[in-house]
Length: 187
Image (tube, rainbow, N blue to C red):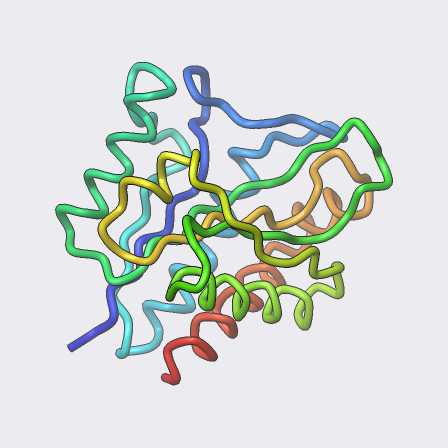
């Protein structure tokens, strides 16, 4: 039986729940592309089934921030996903802040271990610093999903180098995440 991976491309194309902006780029556009690239890699492997929260760049989820998050989680739960991976870009008032980090609801947990593998894959593929795994109990998508869930901050949209790498080489981020999934699942 195939492993079901739910890829949540964080945020909506427009408010409510639009993402961060930096260096002339929008978070929701970056994570949409990386998520679809990752889905293509997973779909090419018979060991996986994939569902995207935003199957098209115009997919708008919910009519408020809270309904957007709730509908993503309900979709993943109803589909019976084995893993939930929410993709985001980080932002900081410090333009030099760089690297990838991820969050899980608790440690030790399957989600925390998956996140460690995702970060190692991202570091190997992109060269961005691995800022490590952290526990966050206040994030809705980690708290309300019924499966191991990881929120990944791929890089800093507010850092010109990180932002350009995410925009110009989304394939590296997708490949890094894919390698992390393979390492974790042993497929």
